[in-house]
Each structure stands twice: as structure tokens, then as C-alpha cells.
Length: 446
Image 1 (tube, rainbow, N blue to C red):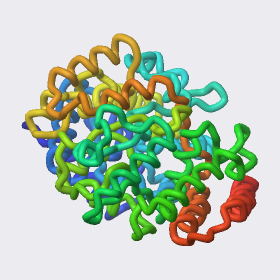
Image 2: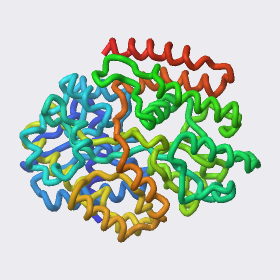
Image 3: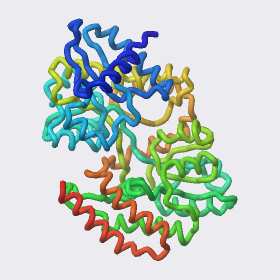
Image 4: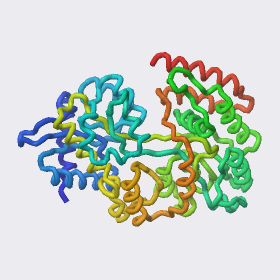
């Protein structure tokens, strides 16, 4: 195996440490090749992913001998504390990783290349789900390419469902059904919690948003100017959490939980249900002691909507046309070839004992999606039947992206959720009114 990707990363990072001004962009190398810098290479600590990434870079360079890929590793792929500074200081790579919620911001500060004239050269572009493409389309121009997408659902423990007299093949479809199921599961005793939710580190605000979406509501108006949390939907979310916590005692006494706490509870068999995306499932098994056969996934209760998120790549505005074209070729090879590439080579993943068969990401449509799903199914090594309800139910849900200024808004909503879960006499109307005022201020500042 060639170690081209690793060697380039080592050289590039060494150069960065000596002369940061040279780190951002690629160009034409001495050999006459088009050199591109890319980020989000898995760190060396993620040995399997790192190996797969290096293999694919080597294959790509062999297939495209006129392109030289310089990969920079990072964890996390994007650090919010340094992201804007890298962009403004000219340090960003030619092809750089972004969350869906970054797209508009990067365009607004004029740091993204307009890819519209080039996407016809991207073989896979028309096969990507339209709603994901739209995230990177601003004022009719294309500024980025989606890489993965996720939607929130309900992870539940089939073993605890059975023990509580519930049908594990019929997960709760409404919040009323979820509340009833949580109460029965908590009734098993032995420290078992029926339903858990986040309420700290902005994660409570994130889940509040997902729960409002599930009831058909929103947290920000369609024009992005006003808060819409002080509504019947927002009130219903908080009242339900309050009643499960204080009336039913189905959420346990320990609150101010974050994702790791809840994953630990689920992996150890002490939790019946929580909201999450499918990528939580392998974490529950590999890191938290869970078992694939016990873990199932259902669509969001409520039946009206679900929060979607994900990531993609944008191209530095300073990149030349040659580097833009090379970058799009690289994206096609690495991430956008159904059943192949860094993310889609399911046979290779299976051999490495990585989970194959989870219901997401579902990036493609039509024949491309059919091919991707066919290869995934052929190499599945997890109980795919446990996720069928999620796949079926998502067909009928409104897929909604996170709000603008998401992290600031989540910080406000964190306080609302934590108050309801830690204070039995919390004034829900006052909490929502105050949160609405604060969110209006965030939106007004732009």
C-alpha cells in the first residue's frame, strides 16, 4: 500500500508549523501537477478510517496523475473557535469541510468559490438529494457539495421494551405513546430510566429544536428574523418533558445530561429511549457496551418533522479554476461514488469490522441510491430489520435543517430545557417568553 496521503499530511503540517502563511492553498507543483490542499483527513488515532482515507487518496492520484493531493488531518474536522480566523487569514485549505449550518455564513463573508460553472463536471451532482444540494445553494449559485446527511430519530432498547410488556416492533409514534412507554419502562425499577434527554452544553437546545420540529413547529420564522418558540408546539415540548420528569418519574433524578451520559445509560442497558441519529448506534456498541440486536431505531415521534444535519465541502474563493476542477474530481472519488470510495466501500468496511447497514447517510436518489443501497445490503453486518421503522417513517416527515445562528440559539434554549427538568415549579410560559426575546436579539444582530 502506498502511504501518499500520510506522507503529504506530514509534510504539509510541518510546513504549517514553520510558516502558517503557506498553509492555506495549493497551486501548481514543481512537477507541473495541480496541487490541492484538503482537510478532514482522519487523525492517526482513528487507525481504520485513516488507512481507508490514505488508500483512496493513493488510488485517486494514480487515476489522476496530473493532480497532487495534500491532506491535512484534524479532529474535529472543523473547530468553531478557529474556523472564521482561518478563512479571514487566508489559511483555509482549497477544499474545506463545513457543517450544513456554515454554508450561508461562508458565502456571506465572501470566502467561498462559486462552483456553478463547474458542477456539470461533477458526475454525481445530479444524483444527490435536492434538499441537500439546496443547503449549499445561495441566491441561485452553488457554493458547496454535500458529503453526508443525517436525520434525528428515536433509539430504543428492544430488550427493555419486551421486559416492560411493550411490542418492540411497534415503537411509539406519538409523544403521548412515548410518555406511556417511558413510564412502563421506568416501572421495571433497578435504576432503569424510561426516557432521557440532553439539557447542557447547547445539546438541550438542539434536542428542543428537534422536538419542536417533530410537532410541526419551528424555532425561527421562515424569513429568519423572529423567534417562534413561544408557541403551542414549544409549550407542548416543555410540558411533556415536565410531566415525564415530575409526574411520571420516568426520566430519572439525574439531569443536566449530555450525549456521553445518555449513551452510557443506553449502552449499559439502563435506558429505554432517547433521540439521536443512526451514527450513535455503533458508538453504543463499540464504546458503551451495547449489543446491536437490542438497539433499534424509529422515526421521530409526532409524525410531522425531523431535524436534519450533515456536512459537505466548499472551495476556497482564492482557488484557481484548475484547483476547483481538481477538488471536485477528488470529492467525486472520495465521497460521491455509490458503493465505493472512502465512505461507500462497504465490502472493505465489513472486512475491517466496521458497521455496515445503518440506515444513513442517505445521500443519493434514483439509480445511484439503488446501487448504494444494494451494495450496502449485500455487505450488511448489523440487524437492518431493527431500523426498518425509521426508514419507512422518514418517508412522511418534513426534513428541516437547523436554524440560523444555531449554537447561539441552542445556548438560550439550553436554559429553558434545564429549568424544566431541574425545577418542578418552572414557569413554562415565562421561560418561553424570555427565550423568544433573547433569540430575537440574536437574529437582529445578524
